[in-house]
Amino acid sequence: MRDNLGQGSFVKTTTLRWAMTNDDRNIYIALEWTDDTYDHDFDINLGPRIFDGVKLLFDNDGNGALEDGEDERTVIAAIVGSLYIDQHAVPSGDESDLIGDGFAKLSYHASTNLYQAEFLFPLARDSAGEDADLTVQTRYNIILFDHADLTGPPNASNAGFAFSGDSDSSLWPDLFLIQAEPHDYPDLPAGLTGLIVFISDHEQSKGDIYSFDP
Image (cartoon, rainbow, N blue to C red):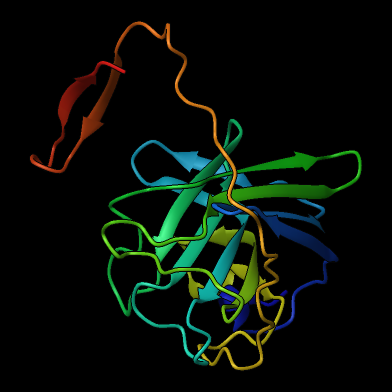
């Protein structure tokens, strides 16, 4: 682990293990790593202030470079539970997808100084083209965050890369995907009643409230 988000001076070491599998629709990735602190500070105005977490980077087409619209998935420690962020690679600006998909959770075990994270997200791109397809040509990298403080000086945030940490992904490993047969997924229960209520900022920047009858 190094400060300046992994680009600076050596800070500490950690031990990381991970595994992955997939079906015909989704990929599942589990990780665990050691950390002697549990950083999860949150500010009501600024959002996450100091946190630990993990980011997955994907060179979807495997051409050796991280490019616009290629997948990034992040989960960070929060005051209660964790926060999952569906992201995509962009040169600058907001990396968060307009269409969020997938799921991730992060937990910390103080008795063993161990973080555990689980991801589930689609193999196929979303309808906005903000993600790309995951295939056997896809290359991936893993970034661990330790005491990341995005409101402080650059050297206040520590990070570690599983593989070479620059945008040249030619040394990243290929994604391990199995050939999975299509299978049926459960439908919504026939007797489901009530309304799903949600907020969308698609039409108004401050958001509109919608209800959906399932």
